[in-house]
Image (cartoon, rainbow, N blue to C red; front, side):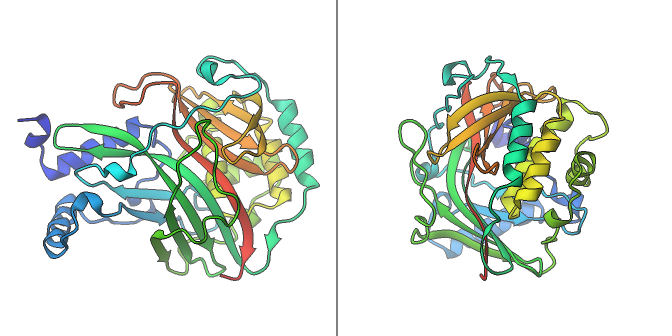
Amino acid sequence: MSNHDNLKPTDEIEALRDAAREAGFTDLISPESVGIQLEGADAILAKAKASEAADPVPIHRRRRTRLALLAVGAVAATTVLVLGIVPLWPDSTAEASTPPVLGFEFAAAADIATAPGMSASDELTRLSRVAATSPPPTGTGTAQKVVTDTWSASIEATRDSVSTVLIPRIVETYLRADGSFRTVERTGKPLSPDGRGLPKQGKWDDDPKSADETLPAGTSDPNFAAKLPLDTDGLAIGILKGSGCRAENVDTVRTNCLFRQVNALYSQYVVTPKLTSAIWAMMAEQPGIRLLGAVDDRAGRSGIGFSLIPEDEPQTRFVLIVSPTTGQLLGSENILIKPDPNSDVKPPAITSFTAFLDSSYTTE
């Protein structure tokens, strides 16, 4: 009999949550903190059993349920909350090997755990100037469309073990003027051996959807990004306010939160050149950021890498990749650089990445 056989359903859920936190999901907001009450574990398991009886498809073949929940209000956090209800048996078709670590100008892939990088302030200041003169976002309409290719860690539980796999997804989001929020998911394609090969803009349109969910009007504030202050101090406070981060001290813990929240901002909103310029000016003032230098990103685009190894998560190197010609954020990478006793992933290894493939206005 395994240790898992002695656990109650509620204990199993808590064990999975603990494993998720250890795998690096510390930026996720609990549903209760934004006033959302989820069903208890017993109710979820009862529904799963009832569904299994009515549906001959094995539970490990059903898609994972994912709910993108965005906080409401002008001062709400911009972090997207993703709640995964994980099946009790892993879906072998969803498993993916860890993508290769990208090599940077000042940090080769083999040295990503120890490479110190360079001072980042001057390059971030330059990118702020570049962004200020970049063209406005494309498209017409009032809905903000963002498309990402994202590979994220998923905790897989069997009767005897818990393991971590990376799940590739194309995610399209539509934030409408009334605050309703639509999420469309498609299964991502395998990467090329060098860790690149993401689809070009629009190439995913005919791929079958694995999920298509819409949250109602008022779910999110569509004007949150547009109302952020453009001075560096006010912008930092505006981004951090309501995020749940400890933001009073200027240190790498605060910088880590800004890294995550900037990534979340781009994941939900069409970020204008003026705001992008202010973001990099703000980041140039934050401690702990290191310049990794030139890199071709997962989609083969030229980028500049910036990284942070924060005091509160020294096992992870967080990376933002920025276009040297437009200043727009191209993507982010989370790299495990030290062993994690609660994960079977061996460092150095990618635990998640996001590539921004489209950001535009639409009439959808």
